[in-house]
Amino acid sequence: MLSDFLPLLLMLLIATGLAMTLLKAAELLGPRRPNRIKQKAYESGMDPIGTARERYSVKFYLVAMIFIVFDVEVVFLYPWAASFDEFMAAGQALPVLGIVFFFIAILAIGLLYDIKKGGLEFD
Amino acid sequence: MIGPILFSVFAVAAIAGALGMLFSKNPVSSALWLILTLFCVAGLYLTLNATFIAVVQVLVYAGAIMVLFLFVIMLLNLAELPRLQTGDGKRFLGYVGACGIFAALMITTSSALGVLPEPVSVGVAAETGSALNLATLLFTQYALPFEVIGILLLVATIGAVMLAKRRFV
Image (cartoon, rainbow over all chains, first blue to last red; front, side, top):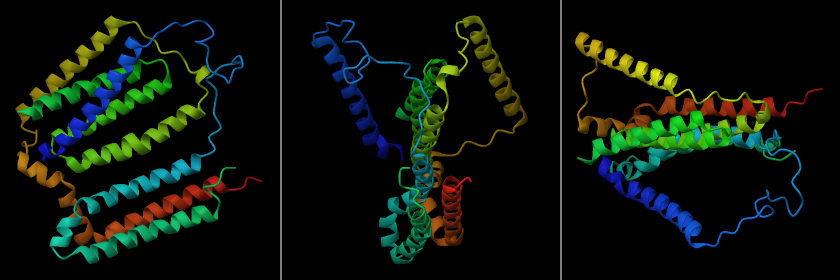
């Protein structure tokens, strides 16, 4: 039901409210004397050269691709975690645990293959 | 009743996020606006009692899909992107008006023809949309398809690793 998620909404409101209040307070209360050197992009004390909008070499793209697969796995584990108490009450906890662990084991093969192939190492 | 009010707030925020995504000049701020939209859509699902879909929306769209978008942004040469044409307010208003008239026409004709589905009661929506209902089906009756999904994900993992780690001679 919607009312179950009211604490979540409150938490989101408090978090965003606190962040915005603190940012605004820092802007209002703190002294602010900008000059040209202060507003330069920070480049470890050097003068910044060239554009910031360059193409990045994405070394971790394989990690991110694997992350997407395991993110989808979490989607399937979430209903299990959310209804574990009900399975316990119905006495079905053990068979369901077996099914879920088999599922995780299937996906662990993929993770092992990935580690074996060096997919999680940076080139 | 707080539900319709929350729905309206989330809907307006989702549209605002979408507009912000369309009209921001920096692709990274576009991505941030898109995150706002995706979270607001999750909020819309929550107000409609589809709690599981709301969680999946945050996990998959605001998590995994956003990673993909950030990847594309990092791989693209942003300096060579064509500039967005903005500032034509009249044409924009025209588009909005046309979409509104189209939506109104569609609603009227479909309700006149009786093809709109019957509204679901809150209790039914809360029951079918919950993770518990899905879990009882997924882990008992549909346990085998569930494991097959695992194999599908395994194939995806191995395929990704194989393609990415292939040595081009």
